[in-house]
Image 1 (tube, one colour):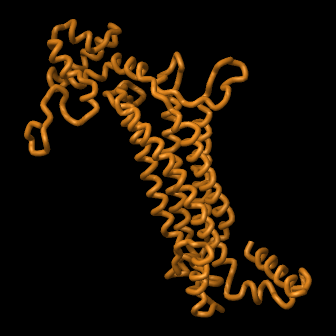
Image 2: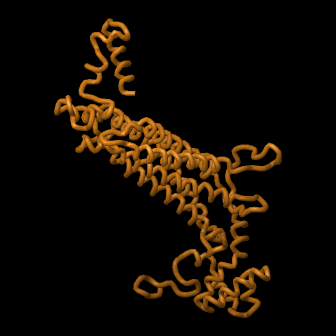
Length: 375
């Protein structure tokens, strides 16, 4: 790759100077264009520059996606629903809390990616063949970094240990790892949305995803979560790319890693597909999600897990027995407690305050500050 570029530049320079392609006079691809350089320091530098050049678009896409989730978190904050752990009924949560958490996850991944990219700003250019700088003028590395900063507009630094920067592709591996972490989280979020939107009659149906295309060639009227499914597939690809990068980085030997082309390809491809997927996820899916308040309340009222709020009053064992009986008799916990006369209606309303269950504290008890004083 390096010599191909050298030859193209030499040929073009000779054409401008009145020469012919392939003659390499007066400009030679090795003696002039490649002066003070080696493929071994040029390609690692090019990988870093390419990744940094793509970084703003990725961070912008993640920022938009995070904002989309956070906006839905605010819009859905008043909607109570059943939490679920192990895919079983759990204590109440607000739909807005779920979406705000998704936004927070994307924000954390954005910060993690930006932090990991900082190490890519250290350039090993000037290391020559094995990082020692043989045949390189002492001022060349500093001036090269200076000119690259001016040409690219990127914040770049002269590497302090060019042998290390040539031997190890750990900076690219760490950056890929941050991308993989986002892919893992993003794939999980996409799967959550598919599950919450399952239905419309035999699933959870707590949210409605925007329809983007007919869902079935045989079932009329069916709508599939196509954007979320696309995001899943992108995430699986990105995770696989990271495995390739890690394996290729480990395959380096002594002073050089000859697997740089496959590392470059997979790293830049991951950045591209995660950028596009995150942007489209926000634009074509998250920003258009609607909540089905009635379905959220339907499942919540029938959840035996709300019996958790009774445990401080009647004990864990008695509360567990109530939950089992409510399921067996196909009645709500609220109705069962009322039938048994365990609490008055007023006490029941205080203790089974579903909104209060989504906030810290014991439902039915006065709120206290950190010093234990009643608020």
